[in-house]
Length: 157
Length: 270
Image (cartoon, rainbow over all chains, first blue to last red; front, top):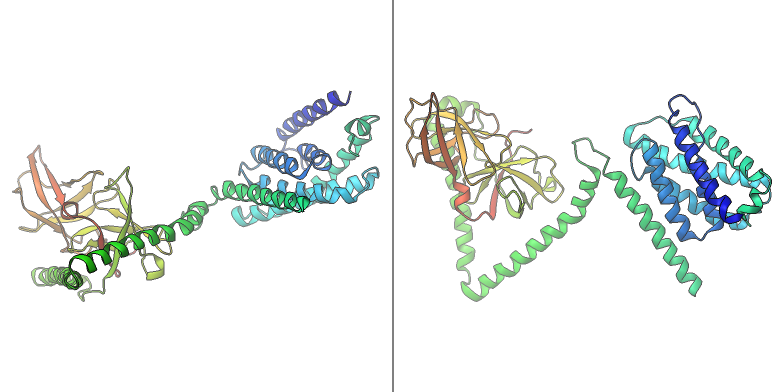
């Protein structure tokens, strides 16, 4: 069961992200579902695998967003390494820890990306990216992990 | 101990991945003067090595020649060569001053202090397009400055971006741009354009005008970029056509090794 649910969940999250990105200009806030995959890898795998997956997820996010390859690649690698390091000290059975970990790390990652965007293209800092997206993504992450059986199947601990 | 090594490896890997992302990102960053940040960083790192290597090779070969073959003679020869270049350039300017006083009034007449430079690299794919020299913005090199060879013949002009220790020079044989020129014998004016080969074309010369093979071509100054009177080349082929004639010019600088260069600091800016 465990072998089946992981790839299915990952594919579903990926497809949902692709679908959501088509409405990026319409939606005021869009969750980053790829980031949930990344957090899962970061709390279950070692640092090297986390960095590799983070870079791939970051490049995919770059492809879906402003198209500046390396921007989210950089920020997601930093955030994932941060999650990988900090998750060892947290009790991830507690929902508020999971919520905080996802929200804070994504906010940090988006802040790094926003700073680069501001420096290079003079993009304004957006509350949607720094606040609402992390909160919405964290909420979705908590909801997904609360689905009966999913938390146990994902075997985070 | 092993754990520590593993941590170090992870840290190195993390830094490498972050650096890779920065490199990918910097390819899209364009600085104010159309320079790519990536190219600027690469240039900043690579150019000193390139210049250092060139300087080392020059130092070794110079000293070998100096000590093994002709002690002192070589130094004197170099000094005289530099002096000759300076005088030749000054001579052209003074001749121009006498011949065309109206032109001379509009240009700066005092001989500028020339900045000596050395060739660092020629693009192997386009040897007649651009070259790189070992003087950069640190020594006051700016885009638009005119570059001569050690005989005082026109070579090209500095183009942006100018790096700290090096600069690119667009040769007059380059397919980009052109040089206002005239036949020295009777001041027939036209435009010299390159085509990335050893020869240039002298354009816009009417068919009725007499141009002979062997005529010397100098800059006319009408382009507002190159000062007038600089020796440019000589006519090697003339073909009469309708209305205009096809005149092929061989620049002087292609007939001799291009190594020592002189940069005129006061030339027109881009």
